[in-house]
Length: 387
Picture 1 (cartoon, rainbow, N blue to C red):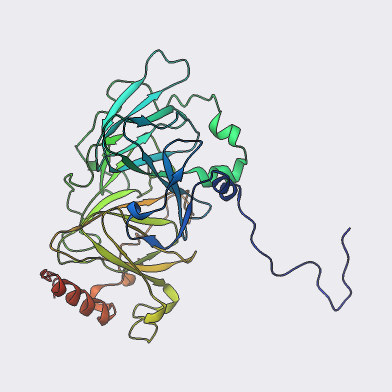
Picture 2 (tube, rainbow, N blue to C red; picture 1 turned 180 degrees about the horizontal axis):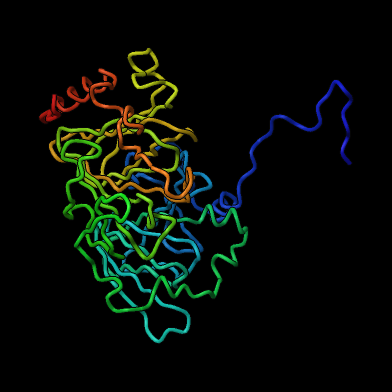
């Protein structure tokens, strides 16, 4: 029975502990570690535990700013072993960190299974609600990183039976054709943004594949967006994520800002990212607020959340070494749509004075470039930014 307050009191509480969401409760019941924070130096360093439902050993990853929207996990498949078959009505794609193997895919009552092989650096997506199993037929362990739309869907429907035991056939997503998982290499222009996209459900090696010049984030910057398996939660439509991109050696990204939800995964090279709330301004070190800037270092297999604070943050990426910094950028969910159909949209990559959210190099904090030069000098690499 509720107790009503008198005129000097308020009803109920004004502070409380946040309860877990349905997806967070699901992760806790899986019996494997759940890793949080702004990033990871290398996923190979994560603690792994036996995973009863899926098989192998795994760990969930829920970086700051992605809560309730999308999630990740890593799973290790022992030599000459396989994961348990599963199907689900959320979208998912996989990046192979280590090892070689194959994936089997089939529909309910199908007469055959489609099989394709993968290697370190492969990126692929399983069509939604298709049964699938990952197999390691080799003599070394396999480590796979997966990104899923499970959090948003699980928090909405609150039914694992609906998600994992649903007979609906998404026939528009998967037709079983023999060419469905044949890697494609020819890029085309995005129908809205006119930046490069690649329509391929399997990319054999995103670590070493050719990337077209883009130049939107740094001089010589290369990039394309993979459109995979008819996905909409992870890219597709007018979305611009995920994407594979590379900053040239000795060059770094403009600081740019957007809402939480994006994660960068290091594919090649090594580096670091700075991220800070927009209210700190464009020159936080010069303003004496450098101690409020967060930093994450990483090597291939590491990652960082671009805007960890649940709001709009600036962030800036730096490759430190003699080779370029290549990344896979991932964000899931259905980002807030502004305005009405036909309204003009300005990219976050446009400079601040153009209505975008990128800080021009000439206006950035002087400390940024000075530190980058020193970091390159420490490893004998050349500074190649235009002056």
